[in-house]
Amino acid sequence: MGYLLGKFSFVGRISGIFPLSKSQPTNLQDNDGIVYWLRNPSSLPPEETYILKKTSLFSGYVTYLWKSGFSFFTGFLYRTPYEGVDFKRTNQGKVPTIFREVSFGFSANISEKLNFNLSYRHPLYRGNDYRLYDYAITAAISIEISELENSGSKLKEEVKKESTELETP
Image (tube, rainbow, N blue to C red; front, side):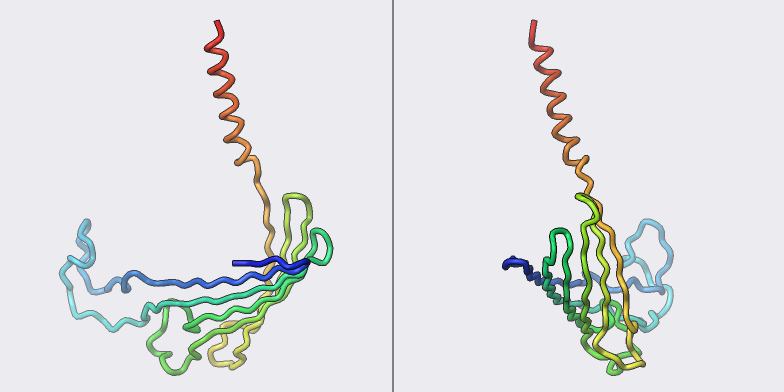
């Protein structure tokens, strides 16, 4: 969801990952064609290394349009749990429960249909034991391909032309 106010744009996003099932057990017989929950176990199942957790993400960005085709942005990301969907059992109680990150960067239109983004991402948790990364630099190029949109209308025009040509005696 976003809002434009003069040269500023405000964008907020709430999302999540919700696993629909558990990890597939590793102690099942390989019976081709039989779904894994109907297979007979070949031994006792080992304890799962990972637990699939629901993940919640909250992010917000503020962008300032400096000149036409050039803007600066800053943002914040909040995620829980810290590790994402695959939560390691051995890390329970040791890993922080939330992950927070700030970012800033710029966006430039190189041409009418080509955009370049460069951003710096910095995690706010600075402990060495479970830090996912020190920092990240992200570069992205976006290309607009409008030929796909125009091809549908061209086909319709050609079909109309052919049908009118067939109708004229």
